[in-house]
Length: 181
Image 1: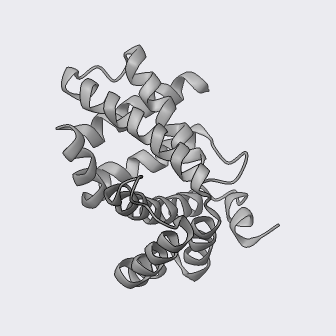
Image 2 (image 1 turned 90 degrees about the horizontal axis):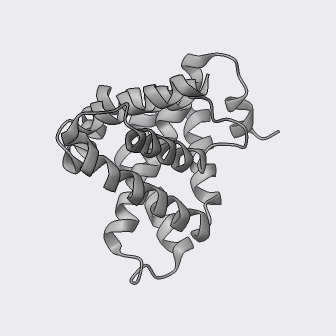
């Protein structure tokens, strides 16, 4: 079992949260940069991915290593390095659907609605694409969205989608996960 998968099978929830945060942080940076570039103008996916990993290292490497440790940082880069164009495109479709629902639903303020639960499910499917098989759990999903309301960079990202977006998404995911257990 490689280092990344070992990290996910530890029992310590706090450690798992740190891994999820680091991976999600790096993926958001990469996804945003690739999305900004545009699917038609993407060029060689592997070359762009390599540049994004280098850019992530330059801009956030020290912070991620300090916060989560070298092993987590390396595991994150391994996930990003192994990302296929097909998987990334699938992730972008899921992300776009979830964010479209978030933009529509957050102003309504009903995180327990059927549509909000669907949005939370889509978000979980999106996140699961970047986690090892079998890693998804309601606790892991909730830890991820908890970060959205605790880290101002993520909060700002979701606030750009909808006012109160991070908090709404967190509550919708909590409601969704409550139904899973």
